[in-house]
Each structure stands twice: as C-alpha cells, then as structure tokens.
Length: 356
Ligand SMILES: *[C@@H]1O[C@H](CO)[C@@H](O)[C@H](O)[C@H]1NC(C)=O
Ligand SMILES: *[C@@H]1O[C@H](CO)[C@@H](O)[C@H](O)[C@H]1NC(C)=O
Ligand SMILES: *[C@@H]1O[C@H](CO)[C@@H](O)[C@H](O)[C@H]1NC(C)=O
Ligand SMILES: *[C@@H]1O[C@H](CO)[C@@H](O)[C@H](O)[C@H]1NC(C)=O
Ligand SMILES: *[C@@H]1O[C@H](CO)[C@@H](O)[C@H](O)[C@H]1NC(C)=O
Ligand SMILES: *[C@@H]1O[C@H](CO)[C@@H](O)[C@H](O)[C@H]1NC(C)=O
Ligand SMILES: *[C@@H]1O[C@H](CO)[C@@H](O)[C@H](O)[C@H]1NC(C)=O
Ligand SMILES: *[C@@H]1O[C@H](CO)[C@@H](O)[C@H](O)[C@H]1NC(C)=O
Ligand SMILES: *[C@@H]1O[C@H](CO)[C@@H](O)[C@H](O)[C@H]1NC(C)=O
Image (cartoon, rainbow, N blue to C red; front, side):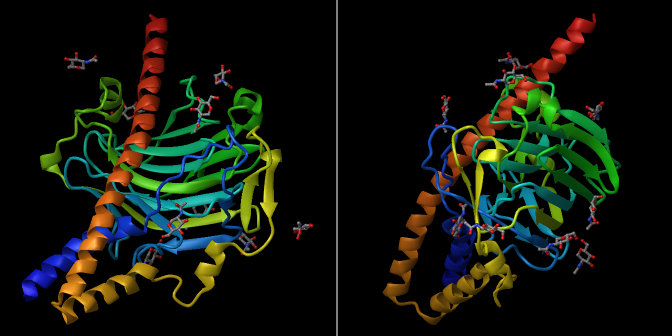
C-alpha cells in the first residue's frame, strides 16, 4: 500500500505544475479591442532560483517541469519531446531583464530567453548547444518575420560551462543587449523599419529549452540549430540562477488603447500589481504549490479510502486534459520558432550566394 501511495504521489507531482498553468490565450490586440489587460510588474524584483522554486502565482510553467536545485532552475531535455518552459504572469512596459544562466550543451539543443508581447513584439537571446563561442540576439515587431536580417551573433566565452549575465535594457528609444558588463548590441527605434518593427508593447519573460535539431523539424531549423539532437548523449540542462526584472512603468495593468500596437497607445491602470502583492505576501517566495503538494501528500498517505483515490483520478483526468492543451500551445510556439529559424537561414544563404 505504501509503495502504491508513493507511486500515486509521484504521478501526481509529475502532473501538478501543468494543472496550475493556465491556458495560453491568443488574443491579439492588433485584431480586436477586447483583449484582457496585461498584469503589470510595476516595480523591481529579483528571483533567485538557486535555493527557492519559482512562485507559481508569478511564474507559469507552460511546458514540462523545471527542476529546482541549489544551482538554479534546471530546464532539462532527457528525451524526445521534452521542452520545459516557464513564463512570467507579469508584463513590463519598458525596463531591464537580467538573466544569470548557463546554457545547455548538445548539438541541436536551443536554450532561450524571450521577451514577448501579446501582439508579438519579441526580443530574444538564443544559445545553440553546439556553439561554445557565440550567442544569437534577435527581435521582431508585431509578429513581422518577413525580413531575415535581424539575428546577430556575438562572442561569449563558454556559455555552456560558465554562468553569464544576459541583460536586455529596453526603452521606447532603443533596445540594448548586454553580456556581463559589456554592451554588445543597440537597436535604435528608427532602425527597426522607422519604428514599425520596434518592440514597444508590454512584454512578459519566457525561459525555456527546446530541441531545434529534432528530426521532425524542417531541414532549415535543424541546420540553424547546428544539427540533429542525440537524445542518448543527454540529459541537456539549461540552468537559471537568477532573474532580475525592472519595470520602467509602475501600475497594476497595461492595456492597448487601440489596434495600432504603438507604445503611445498603451494605457496604464494605477494601483498595486498582483505580482508585487504576491512578492510582499508572507508566503510569497517559497510558493503556493509547495504547500499544495504537501497537502496532497498528507491526503494520500493518510487515507487509502476510495474518496481520496476518486478525487485523485479526477485531478489526473483534468491534468491530462491540461497537458494536451499545453502540448498544443507548445506546438504553436515551436512552429513559429521553426519558421523564424528557417527564414534566418534562407536569408544567410541568399547573402552567401550574392557574394559569389
Ligand atoms: C490577426 O489578423 C491578421 C490579419 O489581419 C491575421 O493574419 C492574424 O492571424 C490574426 N491574428 C490573430 C491572433 O487573430
Ligand atoms: C528599481 O531599481 C532602480 C535601480 O536600482 C532604482 O533606482 C529604483 O528606485 C527601484 N525602484 C523600485 C520601485 O524599487
Ligand atoms: C545564488 O546565486 C547568487 C548569484 O546569483 C549567489 O550570490 C548566491 O550565493 C547563490 N546562493 C546559493 C544558495 O548558492
Ligand atoms: C498563470 O496561472 C495563474 C494560476 O496559477 C493564473 O492566475 C494566471 O492568470 C496565469 N497567467 C497567465 C499569463 O496565464
Ligand atoms: C558559432 O556561431 C558563429 C556565429 O554564427 C559562427 O561563426 C561559428 O562558426 C559557430 N560555431 C560553431 C561551432 O558552429
Ligand atoms: C515587415 O518588415 C519588412 C522588412 O523590414 C517590411 O518590408 C514590411 O513592410 C513589414 N511589414 C509590415 C506589415 O509592416
Ligand atoms: C547584469 O548586467 C547588467 C548590465 O551590465 C548590470 O547592470 C547588472 O547589475 C548585472 N547583474 C548582476 C546580478 O550582476
Ligand atoms: C532534408 O535533408 C535530408 C538529408 O539531407 C534530405 O534527404 C531531404 O530531402 C531534405 N528535405 C527537404 C524538405 O529539403
Ligand atoms: C495615475 O497615477 C499618476 C501618477 O501617480 C497620475 O498622474 C494619474 O492621474 C493617475 N491616473 C488615474 C486614472 O488615477
């Protein structure tokens, strides 16, 4: 009986995080004025993941599970289909995001830091496991992927074996990418198609790992990722020690005043953000699902009664549904990433050909 309880408990804990993660809503404010407002951060916050797990009221796990260890949040590919991903519930409207992390090794494995808005403005860092000398920076405005010259690679020393500080400093005038204390790239507003392609709407923070070199992906993506992933040589682990976020705006929520996607159209609702309220609450840091899994553990251990099992099955049923939904969302995100990767490659080939 005891081992059955343990089995149920591990099964349940494997499924829990996705229960708490909410379905990703794809409401594009460029198409409708009825999208829900974006919850703000509205302040500064440091999330130290080398000792505490992420608070699930502040960070949603949208695929797989992150392992919380004394080294940091570990995003691990153990086998095919693994792609743990987490995203902030809060948005910032201009600000700073510093991630202290070590990228994953492994040909074809992509570690990523992404800032993303609801109308698909995007600022990226991408680390290819097979490339120990460079990191890719990229950006997109309003989901426009029709120009392929935005990705630029910069030198960095041993990103897979050394923790570095990758910082984005974002204002309405320019975006800066910093590696440790060095400014590597600046994108001026006007240089992004006169501002049209300049990321300028409230963005959340997404961290994750994925197999760009999975054999099911397009050749372009596999080539961009550096080749096929060898799943037997894993696991491949991206480790995030700390995330610092500073929101240059303060308030409770951000909403789109019209369908232009311009920063001038963004409305700020005054008040204390949910994220700040959660950070300041007594149970803020250690997180909600710590307590929940404790309760679940007690429930399981305390009773072999049918009631417990029945409620468990209900939860599992709901989890399976949620996981399926999660996988669908992930597939959408991955399809988008693949498209971008293929386009970058095509662009590079065009440049290479035009030189001959
Ligand atoms: C928004 O509208 C454009 C065309 O106007 C369409 O291509 C796009 O798929 C729409 N996006 C969403 C999320 O509805
Ligand atoms: C956020 O950090 C900046 C820079 O350290 C500081 O100037 C500012 O006062 C901080 N804001 C809040 C709300 O803590
Ligand atoms: C966590 O990482 C920070 C640096 O980001 C370091 O200063 C601190 O000592 C680490 N804490 C633990 C418990 O390892
Ligand atoms: C993340 O999940 C929490 C509940 O766990 C929910 O309150 C929140 O709205 C979700 N946020 C997003 C952006 O999905
Ligand atoms: C790493 O990326 C840089 C920039 O794209 C490239 O020049 C270099 O050849 C790559 N290294 C490997 C091992 O792929
Ligand atoms: C998308 O970007 C390309 C290249 O910068 C530009 O030529 C095109 O007009 C843009 N499309 C839109 C809808 O802004
Ligand atoms: C990360 O780098 C940025 C830019 O150089 C710097 O302002 C910040 O203090 C650094 N953070 C840490 C924790 O070292
Ligand atoms: C992808 O590459 C493989 C091996 O090089 C080749 O056999 C296949 O035809 C390519 N597929 C496409 C769509 O280019
Ligand atoms: C929000 O706060 C700002 C600054 O504190 C103030 O100027 C503005 O009037 C407030 N707006 C509303 C709607 O209360």
